[in-house]
Image (cartoon, rainbow, N blue to C red; front, side, top):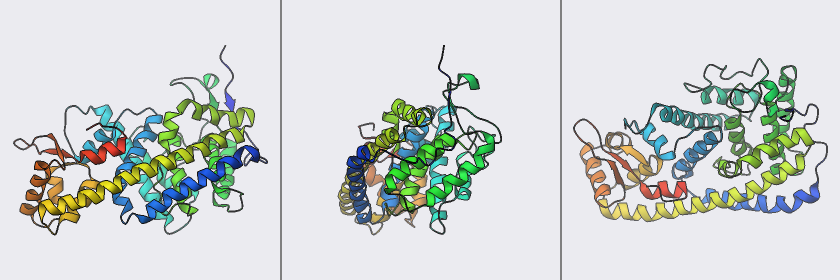
Length: 376
Protein backbone atom coordinates (compact mmCIF):
# COMPACT_ATOMS: atom_id res chain seq x y z
CA UNK A 1 0.00 0.00 0.00
CA UNK A 2 1.44 3.37 -1.04
CA UNK A 3 1.86 6.05 1.64
CA UNK A 4 -0.72 8.81 1.98
CA UNK A 5 0.05 12.05 0.13
CA UNK A 6 1.94 14.74 2.03
CA UNK A 7 -0.32 17.76 2.49
CA UNK A 8 0.54 21.47 2.63
CA UNK A 9 1.72 22.77 6.03
CA UNK A 10 -1.11 25.27 6.66
CA UNK A 11 -0.26 27.93 9.24
CA UNK A 12 3.42 27.01 9.59
CA UNK A 13 4.98 29.57 7.23
CA UNK A 14 7.29 31.22 8.00
CA UNK A 15 8.71 28.73 10.50
CA UNK A 16 8.72 29.97 14.08
CA UNK A 17 12.12 28.47 14.83
CA UNK A 18 15.08 26.90 13.06
CA UNK A 19 18.06 24.98 14.42
CA UNK A 20 20.62 27.75 13.96
CA UNK A 21 23.43 25.58 15.39
CA UNK A 22 23.14 23.49 12.20
CA UNK A 23 22.76 26.48 9.88
CA UNK A 24 25.40 28.94 11.12
CA UNK A 25 28.40 26.84 9.92
CA UNK A 26 26.84 26.85 6.43
CA UNK A 27 25.67 30.48 6.30
CA UNK A 28 29.18 31.98 6.34
CA UNK A 29 30.63 29.88 3.48
CA UNK A 30 27.45 30.30 1.38
CA UNK A 31 27.49 34.09 1.74
CA UNK A 32 31.26 34.25 1.16
CA UNK A 33 31.01 32.13 -2.00
CA UNK A 34 28.21 34.30 -3.32
CA UNK A 35 30.19 37.47 -2.56
CA UNK A 36 33.23 36.13 -4.44
CA UNK A 37 31.06 35.31 -7.44
CA UNK A 38 29.42 38.74 -7.32
CA UNK A 39 32.86 40.38 -7.18
CA UNK A 40 33.72 38.61 -10.42
CA UNK A 41 30.39 39.64 -12.01
CA UNK A 42 31.09 43.26 -11.09
CA UNK A 43 34.45 43.07 -12.87
CA UNK A 44 32.94 41.81 -16.14
CA UNK A 45 32.11 44.90 -18.26
CA UNK A 46 29.34 43.25 -20.32
CA UNK A 47 28.20 40.33 -18.16
CA UNK A 48 24.77 40.09 -19.81
CA UNK A 49 26.52 39.30 -23.12
CA UNK A 50 29.34 37.10 -21.85
CA UNK A 51 27.15 35.04 -19.52
CA UNK A 52 24.19 34.77 -21.90
CA UNK A 53 24.89 31.07 -22.64
CA UNK A 54 24.93 30.33 -18.90
CA UNK A 55 21.41 31.71 -18.58
CA UNK A 56 20.33 29.48 -21.47
CA UNK A 57 21.97 26.48 -19.78
CA UNK A 58 20.14 27.34 -16.53
CA UNK A 59 16.85 27.39 -18.44
CA UNK A 60 17.73 24.01 -20.03
CA UNK A 61 18.47 22.41 -16.64
CA UNK A 62 15.46 23.95 -14.90
CA UNK A 63 13.18 22.66 -17.65
CA UNK A 64 14.92 19.26 -17.55
CA UNK A 65 13.83 18.83 -13.92
CA UNK A 66 10.26 19.15 -15.26
CA UNK A 67 10.80 16.48 -17.91
CA UNK A 68 12.07 18.22 -21.06
CA UNK A 69 14.75 16.49 -23.15
CA UNK A 70 16.68 19.12 -25.08
CA UNK A 71 20.32 20.26 -25.04
CA UNK A 72 21.66 23.80 -25.07
CA UNK A 73 22.99 23.15 -28.59
CA UNK A 74 19.51 22.17 -29.81
CA UNK A 75 17.93 25.19 -28.12
CA UNK A 76 20.40 27.57 -29.75
CA UNK A 77 19.92 25.87 -33.12
CA UNK A 78 16.15 26.36 -32.88
CA UNK A 79 16.66 29.97 -31.83
CA UNK A 80 18.96 30.50 -34.81
CA UNK A 81 16.16 29.35 -37.12
CA UNK A 82 17.79 26.09 -38.20
CA UNK A 83 15.52 23.66 -40.09
CA UNK A 84 17.67 20.61 -39.31
CA UNK A 85 15.77 17.32 -39.62
CA UNK A 86 17.63 15.98 -36.58
CA UNK A 87 15.61 18.29 -34.32
CA UNK A 88 12.18 16.67 -33.94
CA UNK A 89 8.98 18.59 -33.17
CA UNK A 90 9.00 17.45 -29.52
CA UNK A 91 12.56 18.83 -29.24
CA UNK A 92 11.42 22.10 -30.82
CA UNK A 93 8.57 22.29 -28.29
CA UNK A 94 11.02 21.68 -25.44
CA UNK A 95 13.37 24.32 -26.85
CA UNK A 96 10.50 26.81 -26.94
CA UNK A 97 9.91 26.23 -23.21
CA UNK A 98 13.57 27.02 -22.54
CA UNK A 99 13.45 30.19 -24.65
CA UNK A 100 10.29 31.28 -22.80
CA UNK A 101 12.17 30.88 -19.51
CA UNK A 102 14.80 33.30 -20.75
CA UNK A 103 12.17 35.80 -21.98
CA UNK A 104 10.33 35.66 -18.65
CA UNK A 105 13.56 36.16 -16.71
CA UNK A 106 14.52 39.22 -18.75
CA UNK A 107 11.04 40.71 -18.37
CA UNK A 108 11.23 40.32 -14.57
CA UNK A 109 14.62 42.03 -14.43
CA UNK A 110 13.37 44.97 -16.51
CA UNK A 111 10.32 45.32 -14.25
CA UNK A 112 12.41 45.08 -11.07
CA UNK A 113 14.63 47.91 -12.23
CA UNK A 114 11.55 50.12 -11.75
CA UNK A 115 9.81 48.57 -8.71
CA UNK A 116 10.23 45.73 -6.17
CA UNK A 117 9.21 42.17 -6.98
CA UNK A 118 5.49 41.51 -6.47
CA UNK A 119 2.74 39.03 -7.26
CA UNK A 120 1.99 41.09 -10.37
CA UNK A 121 5.57 40.57 -11.63
CA UNK A 122 5.22 36.87 -10.79
CA UNK A 123 1.99 36.49 -12.79
CA UNK A 124 3.50 38.36 -15.76
CA UNK A 125 6.49 36.00 -15.69
CA UNK A 126 4.15 33.01 -15.63
CA UNK A 127 2.20 34.36 -18.60
CA UNK A 128 5.42 34.63 -20.63
CA UNK A 129 6.63 31.22 -19.49
CA UNK A 130 3.51 29.50 -20.80
CA UNK A 131 3.23 31.17 -24.22
CA UNK A 132 2.82 28.60 -27.02
CA UNK A 133 4.03 25.62 -24.96
CA UNK A 134 2.69 22.86 -22.71
CA UNK A 135 0.43 24.53 -20.18
CA UNK A 136 -0.66 27.35 -22.50
CA UNK A 137 -4.26 26.20 -21.96
CA UNK A 138 -3.86 26.30 -18.15
CA UNK A 139 -4.64 29.96 -17.43
CA UNK A 140 -1.24 31.59 -18.06
CA UNK A 141 -0.70 34.49 -15.68
CA UNK A 142 -3.54 33.51 -13.33
CA UNK A 143 -3.54 31.55 -10.10
CA UNK A 144 -5.21 28.17 -10.26
CA UNK A 145 -8.95 27.89 -9.63
CA UNK A 146 -8.94 24.21 -8.66
CA UNK A 147 -6.94 21.85 -6.48
CA UNK A 148 -3.76 20.48 -8.02
CA UNK A 149 -1.37 17.76 -6.87
CA UNK A 150 2.10 16.41 -7.56
CA UNK A 151 2.91 12.81 -8.41
CA UNK A 152 3.49 10.33 -11.24
CA UNK A 153 1.95 11.34 -14.55
CA UNK A 154 -1.75 10.51 -14.65
CA UNK A 155 -2.05 9.72 -10.94
CA UNK A 156 -5.17 10.56 -8.92
CA UNK A 157 -5.08 12.89 -5.92
CA UNK A 158 -5.06 9.85 -3.61
CA UNK A 159 -1.93 8.54 -5.38
CA UNK A 160 -0.14 11.89 -5.26
CA UNK A 161 3.15 12.41 -3.45
CA UNK A 162 2.19 15.97 -2.45
CA UNK A 163 -1.00 18.04 -2.28
CA UNK A 164 -0.38 21.82 -2.33
CA UNK A 165 -2.38 24.47 -0.47
CA UNK A 166 -6.17 24.19 -0.71
CA UNK A 167 -7.82 26.71 -2.99
CA UNK A 168 -9.45 28.69 -0.16
CA UNK A 169 -6.01 29.31 1.40
CA UNK A 170 -4.09 30.06 -1.79
CA UNK A 171 -4.49 33.84 -2.15
CA UNK A 172 -3.91 34.52 1.54
CA UNK A 173 -0.89 32.22 1.39
CA UNK A 174 0.53 34.14 -1.56
CA UNK A 175 -0.07 37.45 0.24
CA UNK A 176 1.94 36.25 3.26
CA UNK A 177 4.62 34.90 0.89
CA UNK A 178 4.88 38.24 -0.94
CA UNK A 179 5.30 40.15 2.35
CA UNK A 180 8.02 37.72 3.44
CA UNK A 181 9.79 38.16 0.06
CA UNK A 182 10.03 41.89 0.72
CA UNK A 183 10.99 41.60 4.40
CA UNK A 184 14.50 42.71 5.38
CA UNK A 185 14.25 41.82 9.08
CA UNK A 186 15.24 38.13 8.90
CA UNK A 187 18.60 37.10 10.44
CA UNK A 188 20.07 35.78 7.18
CA UNK A 189 18.96 36.54 3.62
CA UNK A 190 20.04 33.19 2.14
CA UNK A 191 18.12 31.23 4.78
CA UNK A 192 15.15 33.49 4.04
CA UNK A 193 15.54 32.63 0.34
CA UNK A 194 15.55 28.91 1.15
CA UNK A 195 12.27 29.34 3.04
CA UNK A 196 10.74 31.45 0.26
CA UNK A 197 11.59 28.82 -2.34
CA UNK A 198 10.11 25.88 -0.46
CA UNK A 199 6.96 27.85 0.41
CA UNK A 200 6.37 28.82 -3.22
CA UNK A 201 6.70 25.19 -4.32
CA UNK A 202 4.38 24.07 -1.52
CA UNK A 203 1.72 26.67 -2.40
CA UNK A 204 2.06 25.68 -6.10
CA UNK A 205 -0.09 28.65 -7.13
CA UNK A 206 -0.35 27.91 -10.87
CA UNK A 207 -1.71 24.91 -12.73
CA UNK A 208 1.63 24.44 -14.52
CA UNK A 209 5.14 25.92 -14.54
CA UNK A 210 5.57 26.25 -10.76
CA UNK A 211 8.91 24.43 -10.63
CA UNK A 212 10.58 26.57 -13.28
CA UNK A 213 9.14 29.76 -11.80
CA UNK A 214 10.27 28.78 -8.30
CA UNK A 215 13.84 28.29 -9.51
CA UNK A 216 13.73 31.57 -11.45
CA UNK A 217 12.87 33.33 -8.18
CA UNK A 218 16.28 32.43 -6.72
CA UNK A 219 18.41 34.86 -8.80
CA UNK A 220 15.60 37.46 -8.77
CA UNK A 221 15.58 37.51 -4.96
CA UNK A 222 19.40 37.73 -4.83
CA UNK A 223 19.21 40.63 -7.28
CA UNK A 224 16.50 42.49 -5.34
CA UNK A 225 18.46 42.13 -2.07
CA UNK A 226 21.59 43.34 -3.91
CA UNK A 227 23.46 40.18 -2.94
CA UNK A 228 24.19 40.13 -6.68
CA UNK A 229 24.69 43.14 -8.94
CA UNK A 230 23.05 41.24 -11.79
CA UNK A 231 20.68 38.25 -11.56
CA UNK A 232 23.17 35.84 -13.13
CA UNK A 233 23.09 33.03 -10.59
CA UNK A 234 22.34 29.53 -11.75
CA UNK A 235 21.08 26.97 -9.20
CA UNK A 236 19.44 24.29 -11.34
CA UNK A 237 22.69 22.37 -11.90
CA UNK A 238 22.80 21.50 -8.18
CA UNK A 239 19.06 20.79 -7.99
CA UNK A 240 19.12 18.59 -11.12
CA UNK A 241 22.18 16.66 -9.89
CA UNK A 242 20.40 16.07 -6.54
CA UNK A 243 16.87 15.82 -7.89
CA UNK A 244 15.59 13.04 -5.61
CA UNK A 245 16.92 14.67 -2.45
CA UNK A 246 15.59 18.05 -3.66
CA UNK A 247 12.07 16.67 -3.98
CA UNK A 248 12.27 14.71 -0.72
CA UNK A 249 13.55 17.74 1.21
CA UNK A 250 10.66 19.82 -0.14
CA UNK A 251 8.14 17.19 1.02
CA UNK A 252 9.82 16.79 4.42
CA UNK A 253 9.03 20.42 5.27
CA UNK A 254 5.28 19.74 5.13
CA UNK A 255 5.42 16.11 6.36
CA UNK A 256 7.93 16.47 9.24
CA UNK A 257 8.12 20.23 9.81
CA UNK A 258 11.80 19.88 8.81
CA UNK A 259 12.52 23.42 7.68
CA UNK A 260 16.08 23.22 8.99
CA UNK A 261 16.92 20.11 6.92
CA UNK A 262 15.68 21.89 3.81
CA UNK A 263 17.72 25.02 4.63
CA UNK A 264 20.87 22.89 5.13
CA UNK A 265 20.38 21.35 1.68
CA UNK A 266 19.72 24.74 0.08
CA UNK A 267 22.67 26.55 1.70
CA UNK A 268 25.02 23.75 0.62
CA UNK A 269 23.64 24.24 -2.88
CA UNK A 270 24.27 27.99 -2.84
CA UNK A 271 27.89 27.40 -1.79
CA UNK A 272 28.49 24.69 -4.42
CA UNK A 273 26.78 26.59 -7.23
CA UNK A 274 28.55 29.86 -6.37
CA UNK A 275 31.88 28.05 -6.79
CA UNK A 276 30.79 26.36 -10.03
CA UNK A 277 29.31 29.56 -11.45
CA UNK A 278 32.50 31.43 -10.55
CA UNK A 279 34.65 28.77 -12.25
CA UNK A 280 32.59 28.95 -15.46
CA UNK A 281 32.44 32.76 -15.45
CA UNK A 282 36.24 32.96 -15.03
CA UNK A 283 36.73 30.50 -17.90
CA UNK A 284 34.38 32.56 -20.11
CA UNK A 285 36.14 35.81 -19.20
CA UNK A 286 39.52 34.24 -19.96
CA UNK A 287 38.20 32.96 -23.29
CA UNK A 288 36.84 36.43 -24.11
CA UNK A 289 40.19 38.10 -23.45
CA UNK A 290 42.05 35.54 -25.58
CA UNK A 291 39.61 35.53 -28.51
CA UNK A 292 39.37 39.35 -28.42
CA UNK A 293 43.09 39.56 -29.25
CA UNK A 294 42.84 36.70 -31.76
CA UNK A 295 39.93 38.21 -33.71
CA UNK A 296 41.55 41.67 -33.76
CA UNK A 297 44.82 40.20 -35.07
CA UNK A 298 43.10 38.04 -37.68
CA UNK A 299 40.59 40.53 -39.07
CA UNK A 300 42.47 43.87 -38.68
CA UNK A 301 38.96 45.32 -38.48
CA UNK A 302 37.35 48.05 -36.43
CA UNK A 303 34.40 45.65 -36.17
CA UNK A 304 36.25 42.96 -34.20
CA UNK A 305 34.46 43.90 -30.94
CA UNK A 306 31.04 43.65 -32.62
CA UNK A 307 32.05 40.27 -34.01
CA UNK A 308 33.12 39.11 -30.57
CA UNK A 309 29.93 40.25 -28.84
CA UNK A 310 27.83 38.51 -31.47
CA UNK A 311 29.49 35.08 -31.16
CA UNK A 312 29.40 35.23 -27.35
CA UNK A 313 25.72 36.15 -27.29
CA UNK A 314 24.77 33.86 -30.21
CA UNK A 315 27.19 30.90 -30.09
CA UNK A 316 25.20 28.93 -32.70
CA UNK A 317 24.09 30.91 -35.74
CA UNK A 318 23.19 30.84 -39.42
CA UNK A 319 25.39 32.88 -41.75
CA UNK A 320 22.63 35.43 -42.62
CA UNK A 321 22.09 36.11 -38.89
CA UNK A 322 25.73 37.08 -38.54
CA UNK A 323 25.46 39.41 -41.54
CA UNK A 324 22.23 40.96 -40.25
CA UNK A 325 22.73 41.20 -36.48
CA UNK A 326 26.47 41.43 -35.82
CA UNK A 327 26.28 45.21 -36.16
CA UNK A 328 28.76 45.21 -39.05
CA UNK A 329 27.17 47.67 -41.51
CA UNK A 330 28.73 46.28 -44.71
CA UNK A 331 27.62 42.80 -45.87
CA UNK A 332 30.85 42.16 -47.73
CA UNK A 333 32.89 42.99 -44.61
CA UNK A 334 30.68 40.74 -42.45
CA UNK A 335 31.08 37.90 -44.94
CA UNK A 336 34.87 38.37 -45.04
CA UNK A 337 35.13 38.30 -41.23
CA UNK A 338 32.93 35.17 -40.98
CA UNK A 339 35.15 33.40 -43.50
CA UNK A 340 38.22 34.25 -41.45
CA UNK A 341 36.56 32.94 -38.27
CA UNK A 342 35.79 29.67 -40.06
CA UNK A 343 39.23 29.27 -41.62
CA UNK A 344 40.96 29.87 -38.28
CA UNK A 345 38.56 27.55 -36.40
CA UNK A 346 37.30 30.32 -34.12
CA UNK A 347 33.90 28.97 -35.15
CA UNK A 348 33.27 25.46 -36.47
CA UNK A 349 30.88 24.47 -39.24
CA UNK A 350 27.95 22.38 -38.04
CA UNK A 351 26.39 22.32 -41.51
CA UNK A 352 27.78 23.61 -44.78
CA UNK A 353 25.72 26.12 -46.72
CA UNK A 354 24.28 24.67 -49.92
CA UNK A 355 21.92 26.29 -52.42
CA UNK A 356 19.30 28.21 -50.48
CA UNK A 357 20.26 26.49 -47.25
CA UNK A 358 22.50 28.66 -45.09
CA UNK A 359 25.60 27.42 -43.30
CA UNK A 360 25.25 26.78 -39.56
CA UNK A 361 28.19 27.65 -37.28
CA UNK A 362 29.11 27.21 -33.62
CA UNK A 363 31.50 28.92 -31.22
CA UNK A 364 32.69 25.59 -29.87
CA UNK A 365 34.93 26.70 -27.00
CA UNK A 366 32.21 28.78 -25.36
CA UNK A 367 29.62 26.01 -25.65
CA UNK A 368 31.99 23.46 -24.10
CA UNK A 369 32.63 25.75 -21.11
CA UNK A 370 28.88 26.25 -20.69
CA UNK A 371 28.17 22.50 -20.79
CA UNK A 372 31.13 21.74 -18.55
CA UNK A 373 32.38 19.08 -20.96
CA UNK A 374 33.43 18.57 -24.57
CA UNK A 375 30.21 18.37 -26.61
CA UNK A 376 31.18 20.21 -29.81
